[in-house]
Length: 110
Image (tube, rainbow, N blue to C red):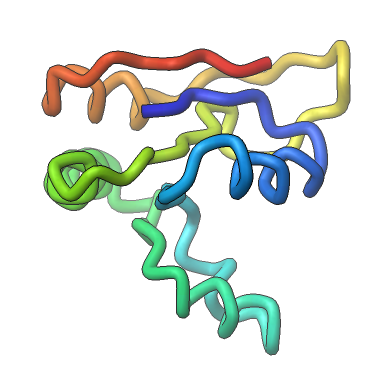
């Protein structure tokens, strides 16, 4: 699985070439954006409701383990959103939770 800094849309496109096949963990609200979200939904991402706390973590673990077992790279942006180069935000637990649940190696990307 991949735990990556999310600084722009560039890495999401570059990862398509570097780490195929892949699946992203993302907030479900992104799927509601006209056209963009609808296309994103066709990629079958692991869409979560971040307000659900532990239930969201369980969903990440369940669906992430399934996707890893199918041979997909699961990509998580632990800061939860895009962050400008040189800036930092608190890391969320989802990526570490999935790595522990799946006992999967982690490739950090910055």
